[in-house]
Length: 150
Image 1 (spheres, rainbow, N blue to C red):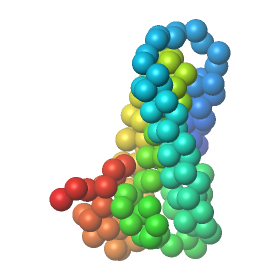
Image 2 (image 1 turned 90 degrees about the horizontal axis):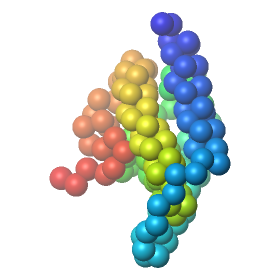
Image 3 (image 1 turned 45 degrees about the vertical axis):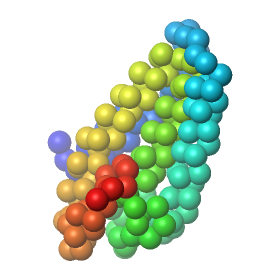
Image 4 (image 1 turned 90 degrees about the vertical axis):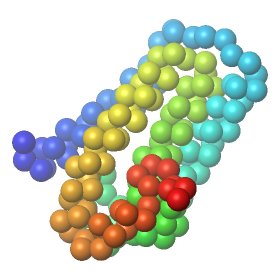
């Protein structure tokens, strides 16, 4: 598969999962209020991470895993802590909303989306390493989706 086709396939699959997530599927459960509202807080936190990270990328932002021509490696803001904060934020937002809505279906789609992000980042990091000589050092210092603790 050519790199361009792989970009389209990964992004297309991601948006298909976004659409599936918002389908009105009835697969609900009941949870304690504290869990439900913790999900809402996680959703809001995820959205903050996503939008802040989008802002941090500025002119380097692209919808595809292949780095933008003329873009630069961003290592500030949330990118100082994790390599893929947009994906982290989306995982938090989708999973948090699924918990808030008490939907097994939405939780399942969120987990599949997280799995897709795992594979998408493998491809993306290969492309980032090819483009930016400093990427391997940056990769050693930062976590993929969550900050490194040690």
